[in-house]
Structures are given as C-alpha cells and as structure tokens.
Length: 204
Ligand SMILES: C[S@@+](CC[C@H](N)C(=O)[O-])C[C@H]1O[C@@H](n2cnc3c(N)ncnc32)[C@H](O)[C@@H]1O
Image (cartoon, rainbow, N blue to C red; front, side, top):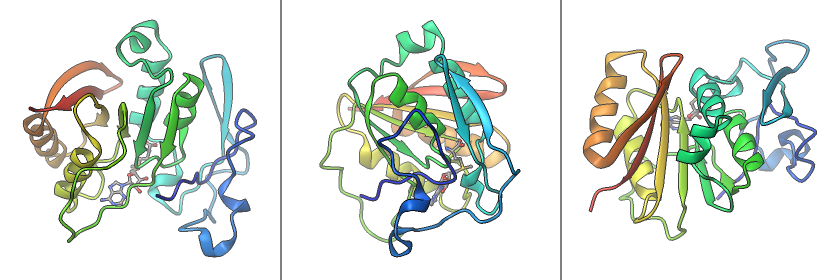
C-alpha cells in the first residue's frame, strides 16, 4: 500500500515525509497550482496545522467534511464516540491529510491512503485489521460510488468502525447514503455545518 501526503507540510509531524521529498518516480501526483502563496492554518487539539492547498486536484484542498470531522474529534463528545487512542486507523481519500493529522494527534497508529479503487477486480476482504476506517467527503466520482462502497466494505471486518463524514450536495449523495446504510449498521453521530457524520459497523 502506498502511503503519502500531498499538498501538505506541518511542523508537528517531523516523521512524516512531505510528498515533494519523494523521488519523482514514486509520486503519483504532486501539486503545481497553489491556492495561495501562504499556507492555510487550522487549529485543532491545541495545535497549529499548516497546509499548503493546491487547486489542480480536488484532493488538494481541505473539504467541509474533513473540517467538520476534525471539529467533532476536537470535542469531548466526539472523543467519547470515536476513541482513536492506539487504534489502527485507515483514512480513505485522505486529500491533504488533515483528518489523518488530527487522528494522529489523538494517538492513533495509522495508515493513510489516497483512495484507489480497482474497477474490475473482485474484492476480497482486507487481510489487515483496522479498528477505524475514516472517510471524509469521498462521495465525489459519482460514477464510481459502487466501487467506493466496495472499498469501504473491503477494509471493514468484525469490530471495525467506519466513520463517514459527508456534506450532502446532490441526489446521488443521498443514494450513496442509502446504500451505505443498507451495507452497514449505521448511526448518525452528529450533523455539523450540513455535514453528516456517521458511525458504521459490519452487518452480520
Ligand atoms: C473531495 S476530496 C476530499 C479529500 C479529503 N478527504 C477532505 O475531506 O478534505 C475526495 C477524495 O477522495 C478520493 N476519491 C474519491 N473517490 C475516488 C475514486 N472513486 N477513485 C479514486 N479516488 C477517489 C479523491 O482522490 C480525493 O482525495
């Protein structure tokens, strides 16, 4: 599995290698058109997180669901409902990586994945067990939503909790949510700034 961050730099994670120090042959994509000259600054869990956003890929900016999920994780109620301490966590469609950064601040041991959906391969279950799978605003390619759901199911085993944060924009978001609710046992944890945050576990 490739793990990388894009469009991001932060002084709080010296151990994470920024994308632009990777040799070119190892980069899937590197930002070229930046949103602004400066870095966007976010404050979560008492930390300042700086992200240089890029506009030449939709994953290069921080989306509303990522912000809402980080805000929720920064509350007592959020931390009671989503306890990431020492949990093995995977983020799907991580974009700039803000959610993963905040999850790491909460003590998760985690993998970061830039969602890559195999289109034609039958999907066995993941061999690695994750306590949490996080996904914020990943309902984006509206012709790949079945594959997105397959990807979530692939990484989810007995005991895994999927945290899915989504801002509803189109009818197809609602169709995806309906299918998500059919595929998993789901609970709506909260709704913040039009972003719904669901917790979901495998159906037996
Ligand atoms: C709108 S961005 C959201 C990024 C980040 N999670 C956030 O909230 O700021 C959607 C992300 O999901 C990934 N993604 C969604 N569906 C995908 C698909 N079918 N194939 C590949 N990547 C997908 C994109 O690469 C992108 O990083």
